[in-house]
Length: 115
Image (cartoon, rainbow, N blue to C red; front, top):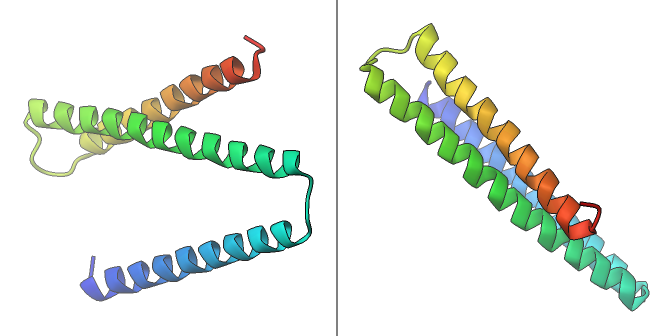
C-alpha cells in the first residue's frame, strides 16, 4: 500500500474518532444539564463501564486467537501470502469473535441474574 494512502486513511480515522469523542462529550453535557434522575445517570455510567470491559475482553480474545493463527502460519513454515495462510488467519479471527461472543453472553447472563 502506498504510504500516501496510508497517511490519508490514518487522517480520516483520526478525524472520525475526534468527531465521535466531541459528539459523545456534548451529548453527556446536554444530558447532565437537563437534571436527570440520579438513577438514570448511575445506570448510564454502569452501562458504559460494562461496555468498556466487554470491549477489552472481546479484543483480548480476538487478538489471542489471531496470535495463535500467526503461530500456526509460523509452524507451517509459510513465508509468502497464500490462500491457506489467509484462511488460517481469517479462521482464527472468526473463532476469536465467536469465543468472545460466547464469553460476553455468559458474563451478561451472570450480571443480569438470568443464568
